[in-house]
Length: 320
Image (cartoon, rainbow, N blue to C red; front, side, top):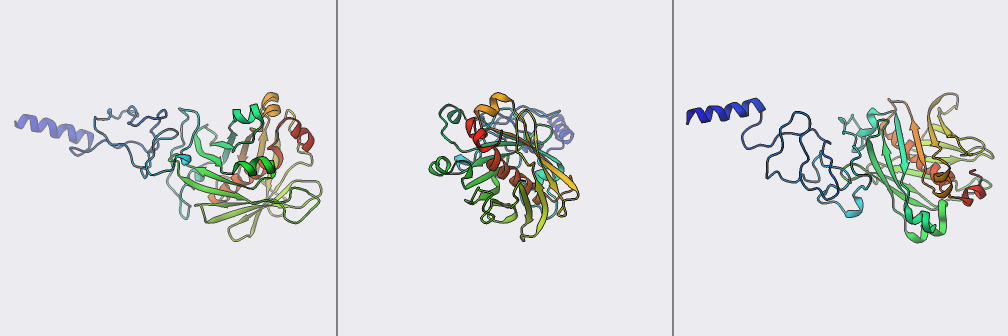
């Protein structure tokens, strides 16, 4: 009896886990296919999970990505995407950081990939846009979903007002972007394009406002107090034939380039028959996380203004 107790105590002391408690796993390590309701295999040198482990709750920081059931969340808030794509582990949140934006604190580049919608390709029927947002390592940081009604999408086209919801790996909405209906003609310097970025949803952290110019696509980036912070300037001719298109992020006096929003050439077939575009955003590593989120909003506004067209629509609008 004493020998059995000594062996049991030795096992618990070696694993540093009190009797009856499950081992602690690294947050964000869980990956699994749609419908997977249990823990995956052990990570690294951790021992395998024991039978009877509970499914993590919605507030658990290590819950899995696409397809993993998250309790208490609406179905439409569940991110969808390729199975097996790794999510970026959540870093420690810096001070005064809105919840969910801590992912942006340790990166200086964002890749935005719009998903191809087969219904839109086959029928021309405009569907809600969906985007994967990744870091430079290819790890998914966020998933963006447009929330616009059918009538608005197909009547207003690329000029439509929209709500874009940015979801984290738990399917929780961490950023909301609102674009109101505005005039799309450069002949009218009033009611120009703009987008509002909220984080958390309902609390504005910045704005991107089109600046009138007869030739160049130009924008002003503002903080939550509507104070000008940065400028964005694009090329005179927004031409996407076999090359990338760069929109430079500049200081207020436009003398210093601090970053770039680039629309990447995706190949002739994709550019011709779809409006699914790829973007890259570069900014200083020490830029405020709120401004990094605003740069993401600027990317989406630029996409809708200049690249949300397909085939002959691109030719008529001057994008090619």
